[in-house]
Image (cartoon, rainbow, N blue to C red; front, side):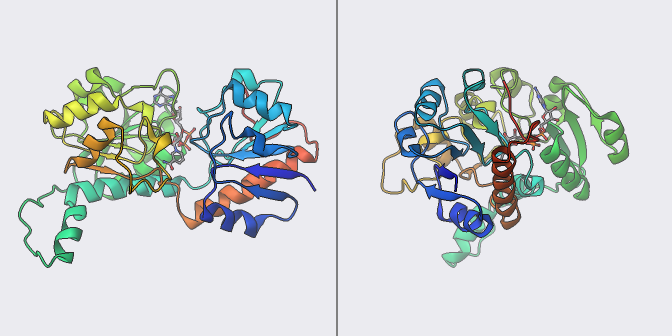
Length: 330
Ligand code: NAD
């Protein structure tokens, strides 16, 4: 039986993988995959990693030295892998789609929570404070949502927005005009999207082109009341620039499921610690910011799909199939 070392695992990962696994001996580790922890994969032919594992050249060397040939990513994104370096050393398979609805619905949850101040009313009523002063929101109906990236998740989010009676503007370097026509929304330039949208939601991958797609310049184009929602990847936003814009009231609010420097914090219980990241601490302290801990994918359907596709990826690889469907190449 092939052995797979699973890194950065939590109880919910184990539950869904154990339910689906028949063919492998799985070793679960809570540690993130790094050059220091790669030795845990000794004796395993494959490792399974997640979004905040650090899979640079040294980690890859350590894995290869220990006999690992296959890297199974149990997520869609792969920006944390040195793909060029891995080429010819490791086969990399991912889960390109598991539930776009999970992420799109979480983006809308962040928007609704922020706009209708549910995070505040929840705390107030628990303390028997039934005042509604300061909780005024606005109707989403008739407002303009700007969607950056119209792939699987972006499209699911567009459908939700259209269901709310919102207008939609979208930006994607590979626009699908027939799809836009069928749904009744327009593709525009990035600049126009930033200028005209009441809500900007990011659904593009992290690449060289999209790193800091939200920076001082794009923030300066936005409405002073604009809401920014990021459920994609932290480095799409220059967090210091966002913090400045929020504090200077040049932007309305931000709902973030991801954060530029999330690796040391997200998925860990750091409640007893003093957080040594000033930007994160200040963002959390603002009343018009909601941060969730990279949990947009966390639904039963998504976890189930992640487990079954990851294990089928392993099956296809170990069966020696050519043209692996979910392979990631440099
Ligand atoms: P997808 O590949 O289906 O769609 C991505 C879209 O972005 C494509 O249409 C592509 O053309 C577009 N794009 C590429 N470069 C762009 C650019 N420079 N500007 C604007 N758009 C650009 O991917 P998806 O399944 O919709 O996922 C989108 C992202 O969501 C992933 O890359 C990942 O980072 C993130 N994600 C987050 C979570 C979470 O739990 N928070 C879970 C899954 C995925």
